Length: 139
Image (cartoon, rainbow, N blue to C red; front, top):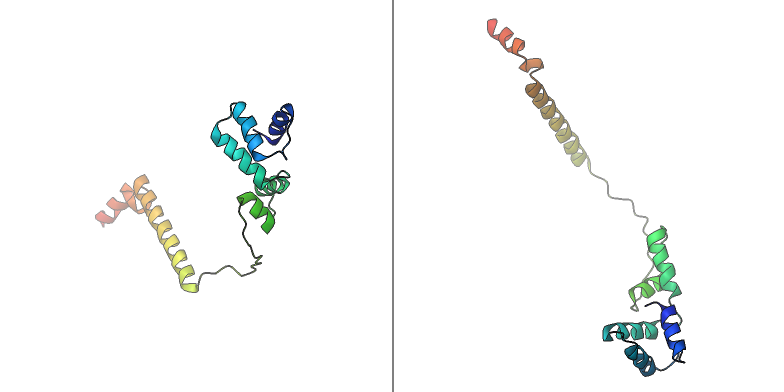
């Protein structure tokens, strides 16, 4: 149920969102809503009496832009109060030391050589060609 639907239902019964919680609960119960939905709507109404513009703009930022969220937008999205300190990290990413770079290059070349030898063996070319083997045996 959206906020507009809730407002329309309450207007039909002569109430508004500012009506007492018990009255809204009674109207929703008579309309046939399950108790879990009623509890959810009442909780939402209590936590967001003026709607949820921060939540909508925060969700828009999360899913449609690369902008970072402000602490109050994070609070609105999570539904809890928390303190978030803004930390700007301009730290240089950790670089590999020379030994790690050497090992990466070494194992890459080793894998390439084994791949080449395997391809030559599988295709029977180069030193694995039939003529190359028999030529070495004749001498």
